Length: 498
Image 1 (cartoon, rainbow, N blue to C red):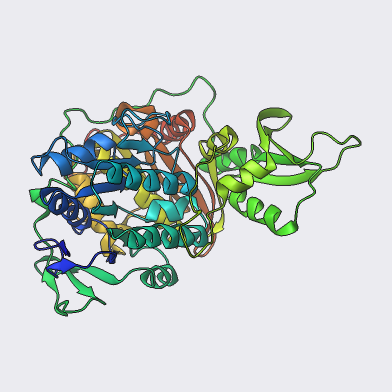
Image 2: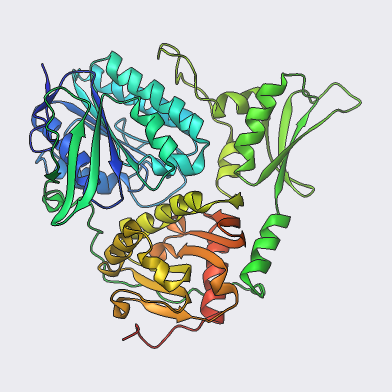
């Protein structure tokens, strides 16, 4: 029996095993389509699995199960913020019930695959042999991982869904590199393209039999409340300056973080070069250098120690690290995502800083969207964004749309850069300078709306046309320091520009 997709996709049904990839800009109703896809299944007594890379479990359950009038619906929610309990933030790895799972971060693709596999099995044990899987955004996965790892992850997950007769919908924002979109398209049976039309968002479905070719309006997303931020009565205030002295410039902050680069030392390694190189690539993005050391004694052998300077942080067997960061390349799902322990060393490395080293605009756009989406999802607090030139706000339609959405939310938004045209300037606090660091820096910092676990910041400087170096971080004290520096150096105006 086919899966009913009326009023969800421009096709009435999907055959079991079929998967659909959504592509297009952010905030065009794509999340509402995903939630409605799940709701249609719950109404038909099917199971649902929602993987959210941006929201909390409680927000997803409220948007999907509550609107389906089934508070006890067979809906599994998997979050990527380390908090399975349904709140916003947290560092736990357990679950409050078997249908609520979490992994430490979007970097843990193996853990995410295990959680999806377990959710499928639990739904089957409950007698729900038909299910729908939704991954709300693949962009955060690509920010935290080399894209080849994301591709292999999707290859295994979608293969698993197809094998057991489920169906899936995943969304890949088009601000990611075009080659990535082309590669992922090959993993899906159909592609749901989104665009901004004259009268609002539109979409069309390609690649599936009997799918209409014409563009159609995206169903009204207000029915699910999917992309609307939660109501809040508080706006962000000033960050209390850290007790330590603030940096003299953003450049100084970047240099200090570069000097704090950590090291993963592998003692007495006797494995192959390719496996070591895979680990080096993985840890490089985490601002960690990997080196090998031979000692005069036999032990420790094939043991990795993470340390900052001479201070050890954690240790793990090399084999355990390698298994944890490797997504199975098998064409079948027989052995993929089997139960495995994830070393705490990885969580500590991932919970620190991520380096930006001679990266281009595409990667910085991906990270910026992650931060901006987090601010929208929290629905309160303050966001600081440096555009180098303020008229860059309108360079890309996607950027303008995101900030229009932020301006309409309870989030307070500060914009920095060389003076330029800003649509509806009264909606923002504007900080301008004709030259200096504001014309060279790209930064986005969100204060978490009072929640340390939701704080995140990107700080980079342009080193050559279109090339940047710096860092992005979820360390609360570093986010606070960044925002405190901006507040002290560029005083908050009395009110939004008029």
